[in-house]
Amino acid sequence: MSVILNAEKVSKTFSNQQLVLKPTSIKINRGEIYVIEGKSGSGKSTLLSILGGLEKPTSGRVYYRNSSFYELNDEKQSEIRGKSFGFIFQSFHLIPELSVKQNIELPLTFNTVDNRLETKDLAKRLEIEYLLDKETTKLSGGEQQRVAIARSLITLPDIVFADEPTGNLDHKTTRKIVNLLSELSNIYGISLVIVTHEKKLIKEPHHLFEIQDGELRVKNRDV
Ligand SMILES: Nc1ncnc2c1ncn2[C@@H]1O[C@H](COP(=O)(O)OP(=O)(O)OP(=O)(O)O)[C@@H](O)[C@H]1O
Image: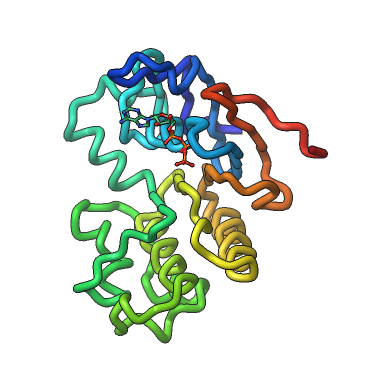
């Protein structure tokens, strides 16, 4: 199994000296799904931001394809974030002035990518083809999240990081979004790292963890 991302003993202390993330090691394999469960304030977003190249850890290293990510220069770091990582957030972060199609294609305008998915194909798989020319402000929460998912996948990244991707959605929409995400991760061989407060968000992730007071542990699936 090829390891795409390897975090070695990463920890985080903010200026108030509180240890928000205890030294944590985790390896992300190609095409596999990782779910990290934890209560509010447990350190989920902090860990996800460190793994996703958005927040430098206080100690430890994150290796992306054998390069120590935070030791690369800013230009190289943003190139990796733009081309090889995708991000999905709870509040979608769509741009209201742009159409659905323009939102999906946004990552392509910032990066010269070698690979990409065709917008129409992706939209078809997410069942939002009919929305491509629409404004995003008039879409339902579930539709907006499907647009955000399409945007996270358009560059055919190695890994998609999702922070509470279904947090604002009802139960039925949540199931649909989660199934779509797993399916697309499988089809395109993209690794998925999801942090959530919700238990059993995905039926059978390849890896299930729990984070409690900044400490990451493998979770017993029966609990
Ligand atoms: N920039 C920061 N400066 C100081 N403390 C921070 C900062 N970011 C996060 N924290 C603290 O670190 C702890 C963990 O925060 P984090 O956002 O990682 O938790 P979380 O599990 O994602 O919570 P939630 O589900 O509520 O988003 C919290 O106590 C938070 O107040």
